[in-house]
Image 1 (tube, rainbow, N blue to C red):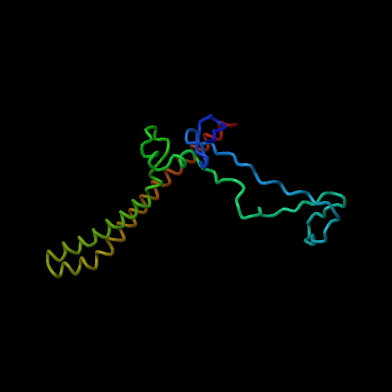
Image 2 (cartoon, helix red, strand yellow):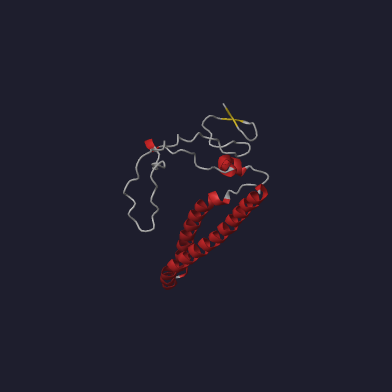
Length: 176
């Protein structure tokens, strides 16, 4: 078992971050490329490019070999907590709305479709002429409900993203 270098908690060997404090697990970087000494190469033909001087080491930079990333992707404490952990977080320090918004939007589209079908059904229940009018009006009802749901959910996401960014700004200013 690995131990968090920040809080000392034990964490699984394959964990990307500490489950207690969210500290990213340190991974050793790959060995740095060794400098190669030699005469400058004539590959610098662009105007404004600085030519290396003779006698100085020439380093070769490139992508890491083997196709493996050198570092793990950053994981915040909220992401390490997971959906169920965030759902039962009584301090409300992490938001689940940002994770549920796609499902809520799909439900809103399904609801708009059912509402459009209900408009058609009520129209034909009142009479065939009124039913034909409602048949023409039902796509307008559908799109109006979908547009309103989308705008509402985008406003909710703006509020949640602003809250997340403000929390990150506050965390970064405390470090300085």
